[in-house]
Image (cartoon, rainbow, N blue to C red; front, side, top):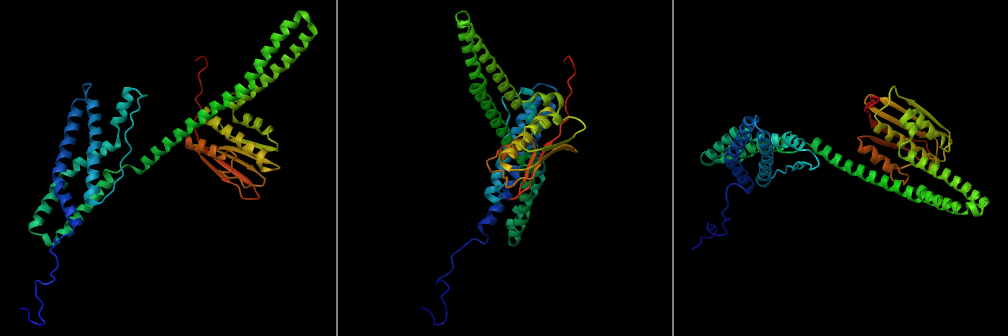
Length: 394
């Protein structure tokens, strides 16, 4: 019987539920698992370091230590997965260690031994043992004696775990960024070299090679007519002589496109002055260098200015231009200005995007300032490397 105005306690009772939510229970599980995981990590780190260090006097010591560091990477992966599942902390995976086959055995061994990810994981294993004992003890006791404040304790302790995972198990942002840039730059360098080779092959096949084939055929016909018709043979030899001159000019132009002799012999000042004379507008060249940079840097600087002056001739409608080259500390700076109509862009189809990629591949910079109506200023920056003078006779 139900008394009016009095609610039956069994009617519409709320469903039974745990006092702690799922997130808190996952944090508690993480803290209780800290002890076995920290024991595994500590024992592994001590075993690898003591065995590897003790055997360094033998041939297997350093390879054993390198293998131990590779194994530490796997332990770090396991810890990152545990933190991701139980704590909701997403720590990026480090870049795999690339032991290139083209390198020697000792170089690959040295790369494995100086792996920062493996060493940080070893450090993580060392410092985690006392922390794992502390967190396990506090959490286990709190389950029975301090359960009202257990959620707050669990959150505070796991916040420390989150910080440790982010600091010691995450890759170095700067290092990872640099690795990604170098991988991208290596692809740009390979593609650029392949494109240059294809261009050289095409120029040789369509230009000098075809002209030399015609020259050989003409000389063969002149040889046959030498006794029958000397005058015709002489005319054919004269024509062949002209073909030889044209072939030589094409070969010179091709060699200049690869690496001009004046750049090798006299440096940037003379080489850029020669380039400026081929521009359709007057160009003032100023090179302020007390010494020559490395040959590779010098070549990139030359071809950068050459390409920019070609753009001035073809697209700028300028009346004058200037080229300034100077050194600022450990950087080589190039600035090309013109008083043309402006509007130059990296994506404008003038080859500037390719120049930017080439400079970026060698850790350089490429900046275009070209408002509509002009003027246009292009600044390129390259790392400075001193030129290695070769000893005569070697």
